[in-house]
Length: 82
Image 1 (cartoon, one colour):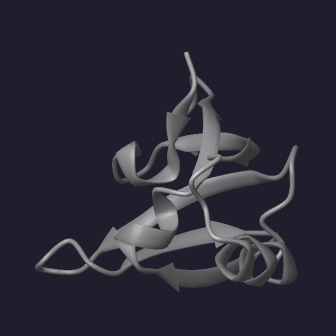
Image 2 (cartoon, helix red, strand yellow):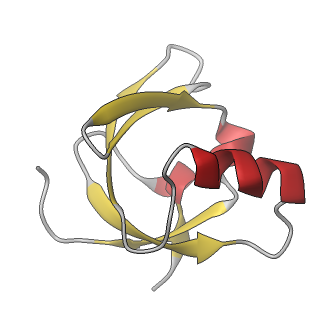
Image 3 (cartoon, rainbow, N blue to C red):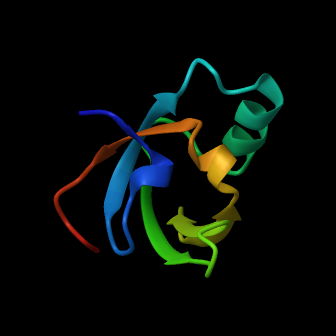
């Protein structure tokens, strides 16, 4: 089942599979520039008190994303939590 990055829970790991069709081109390009490319492993590290932004680790780097941007990223959840 394909989900969006915004649906991950703390500690879960996933693999990026692409972007939603609704994702604006400038958002997609920014995410690609940050390393959000197909096949990359990503893990949710922390959620702010109001659940926006959310901190993710990708390519050994922690990046905070707005929930609206995380909704653009399609993922496949892996079974592990680490």
